[in-house]
Amino acid sequence: VNITTPERAHARDDLPWLRRRTTRAVPPGAGAVPPAGGAVFSSNHHGIYPDPPQASANSDLSANDSMASAGPPQPRADLNLSANDSMASAGPPQPEPAIPGPDNMDRYRVARTRDGLPTILTPKEPVVTLTRVQSGVGALTIQAVISDSVGDLTLGCTYNLVSGQSSVIHHGSGLRVAPAGSRRPVIIATSGFGELTVDLAQNRELERLVVIAYSESGAALSWDGTLVVRTYGGARVEVPLRRSPGPGVLVPLSLYNIDGEFVLRAEQALISGSIREATAAFGFEDISWLDDHTALS
Amino acid sequence: MAAPMTRGSNVALTREIPSLRGVVLGVKLLSAERVLTDNLVVATILCNSSGKALSDAHFVFFNQLSSPELSVTQLARAVGQDIEQVEIDLSAVPTEVSRIVVVTYINEGNAARRTLGQLREARVRVLNLADNTELVRSENLATGLHNETGLALGELYRHEGGWKFKVIGQGYGNGIRALAADFGIAL
Image (cartoon, each protein chain N blue to C red):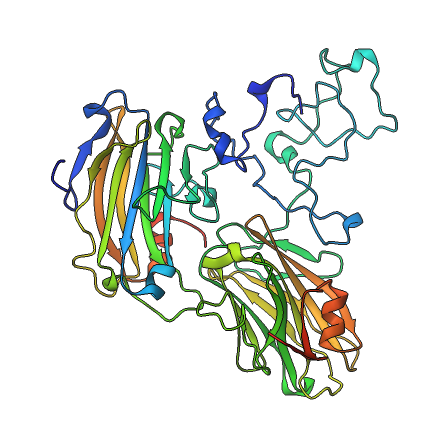
């Protein structure tokens, strides 16, 4: 980014209180500005929180790496800070990248759902990010679609709310809504094998949600079937539940609210132990427990 | 103060006030039914000349407080008597935007179904962004609503190089789904 020419800098749509300070007209189609919190996961972050949107692996500070003409960073072994490559004077011209314009902004391509096709999350491509509209309109439903041969699989979730409240809900327990006892729940665990619905009018209340699947009776399950997440508009995200048969608590999916965009990530954790241990493995530490499978409130 | 504007009536804002640079659309929705008011969402849609949203990013609501070029911004917290306020910098509105429509709908989340027929009051007003003075306000659009779950309140639109404001007051039976279909928003 060439910070020496503010008029060429991109508008910050994540900072609305600065909007009066944009002095130039943005040309039509300049929507290439990545959305605020255009969630980006990198492998070195254990998938917990995304990198800041502007984080760049490119250490080249030369002037011709401006956002307007930016291509993929030219691989360079050295950090070239020599005088003729300073920010004030343009460095030696580099070959124009073959890829044109706005696409180059998207160095970190955010995976989105597709029209008419389900998005299947796999170990290789475990993450999809819902748009602000998908994350904010109607309700999000999370459902385990399984056959009877699996056993008595029950779906639940553990959550952090922005308010600081954190607990576990599942249909088999007395705790079926989040926050507990709420007149206006953010999350509800409904009946059947278990279905979770998130009220997206309250998406600002939700920080993260981690889905858990387990046997109500503590039996070993023949893990199979699919976890299906549906947006209000009908986009589907699917996570295979197939694992080797056995006991334990499966964590198939996590959901992080990254500045208004829901980032769904397939987790690969089958934790041999209780719900308490499974939630602890995902860093839920502010939960008081009645027993290994039931939160206090 | 002038008489409230009725459904379908319009006013030439920039012709009446040539110095007008920006406006605030203030929306007031009142009901005794808390389940209803909890789930009311106000949204502003930037439309092209065919009446379709330019993109999903041009659907401005609580989870997307600004349009990409920052011309339309919903306040996180409205000031005064409105439940929501949307600030519009008229000169920053992209040229391909012909209409800016403000709507409300009942979000179908976890709550029991409600309808806009339970609203006691629904109105939209226009303030001058520069000094917060009220320029016009609509009549109460709640009258005549029954089973609707969506409502187009009013719109700003380009006319002869300036901007006019029109009260719409049209209800929709299928909430945001119907509004999204009408204005070309991919949910």
